[in-house]
Image (cartoon, rainbow, N blue to C red; front, side, top):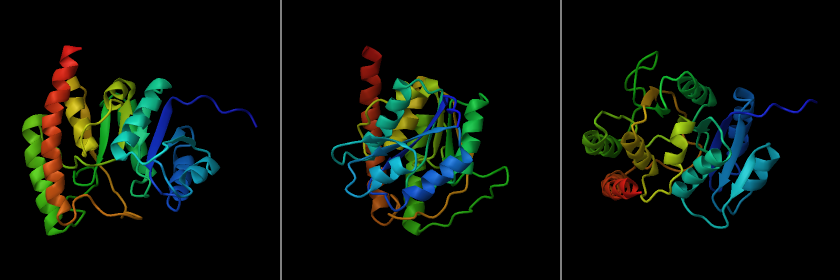
Length: 246
């Protein structure tokens, strides 16, 4: 078999104890994005996550201990930046993100329509009907507060600021690879991209139910996330000022 041509695209998957869910995610990536390289960022898992990832042909970057999602996200983008990938996708390890939707996001970025495409459960249009996802009262409350807090800073409405489905070009990599200081790394990422003047497009997508875990906006976590975002806005101001002094 002839060796595969080097790829200009990396898809990374942050994972912590996802050995049961990873096979389906990696098989789907291999089928729908066969030309992309795949990296699993193993966040100190104590199960078979790393072995499963290698067994399914993925590169593995393993932490010696659990560092949290914000470390996993930064490490994925940093790996892509250091290895000079032109395009990068990110999906979750729980099977929530259909790879055909990630392919659409990558098409937007490859076509030059934006620097970053974010998959949105709540945006509508192009065959994606409004209100296609039902949610609890606490989730609706948390989402509404989150949108209200972010709009003055982003200068625009953003419906799904905690989405983990991303496609980005090389210009975004050094920005997204910086360490995250808050518990809301996706929100912090949007703030950084806004400050850098990059074009971010929120794209309607379908997502599946989670294979495991629970939503960040469930019960009292709705309020906790809003408080976390408020702290993120403050940290963002500090981060932005420090970058301005470099």
